[in-house]
Image 1 (tube, one colour):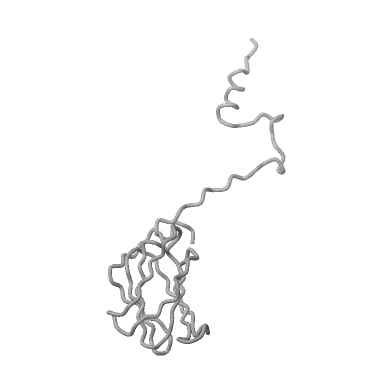
Image 2: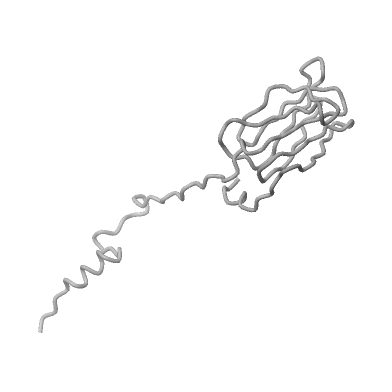
Length: 149
């Protein structure tokens, strides 16, 4: 009795197996790139208030590349200046604080602060040009790792 192989051909088509004549060479195989995940933590969801114990100017740069205008922070929390990024983009990562001389454009220091969350923080520039952070209404987020930063 002769067997029919039409069912076998259908199986190759259904399950993606290719008969010998349809095999591709290594040059013809194109790898599919995995889709990029979008970060759930947006830079515009973070507000950075800056005070300083030394006379200086400050420029804050977010991880998405957006930088603030030059700010002249005061010594007390009543005279703080606030930076809220406007652009969309990744907001977790290293925020850079460029500390400039009060009278010219000399960069005195550029300390960085790693943030991964939403809310507002207070950053104080100390006399030795280091920075210290005080959390106000800031929520740390474990999902920041998912964007691939």
